[in-house]
Structure formats: C-alpha cells, structure tokens
Amino acid sequence: MNVLLVNGSPHANGCIATSLSEIAKQLKCNGVTSEVFHIGNKPMQGCMGCGFCKQKPNANGCVCQDEVYTALVEKIKNCDGIIIGAPVYYAGDCDGERTADIANAIRGGYKAANEI
Image (cartoon, rainbow, N blue to C red):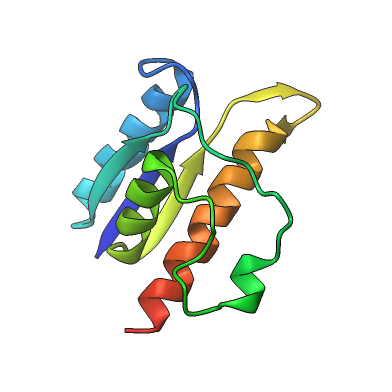
C-alpha cells in the first residue's frame, strides 16, 4: 500500500511538514509506504467553472493543467490513499484556493486511475 501525503502549506519545513512526517513514521511502522508532495507556494490555476471536466470526462481532469496540477495528478494515480495537510488560518477552515486546487487534482487523478 502506498499513501500520498500532500503538504498544502507554503512552508516546506513548518508545522504541516512536521505533522506529515510523524504520520509517515507511523505508516512505515505498519508496513505502508508513503511519499510527501509539497505544493508550497507554487502557483496553481484555480477552477474557472468552465465545465471541461464534465463535458469531457475522459480528458484527464481539468483544462488548467499547469506543472503542479499535472505532477499531483500523476502522484494520485499511483497511490492507494491520500492524506492532506493544510494550514488552518481562521475558524478551522483550510485556505479556499488550496482546497479547490487539491479537489481538482484529486478529481482528475481519480478519473484517470479508474479509466485504466
């Protein structure tokens, strides 16, 4: 089993990275491999609401396939589980843009993985 640990924080070595590192240690103790994917402060195109993903469901996800999106989708295709770590800035919610970015990538990776 392989689990993808997504670090949605802009800080490569911050609290989210520390938390994901602890999770990775526990997964390893239980025979589960893991890999951390750090989104960081790299730009990701947000959802434009164009409906491309609905109109062309076999087109591997989103029309906005930037470098980060493409890399994340490839990682998602090859994992058995995903754990997302993201900063909480106020009142318990993850940053809206980061939530949308990760959701789009998961949707794209899930579709592609299930078409194989």
